[in-house]
Length: 63
Image (cartoon, helix red, strand yellow):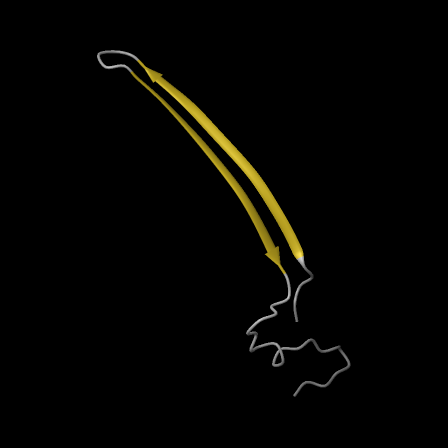
């Protein structure tokens, strides 16, 4: 029992700059980036449930 292989990914980025004046002046900047990938497919290694939860057709008898 498993879903078909599914893969997806995303990229996001953000940034900002801050400039302040007054008695003490400062300047700041930040940059952020994220790259992610996600997959879902058949569990192939060390799957102890594989044979206990196999797919059964509707006409198969249940134990």
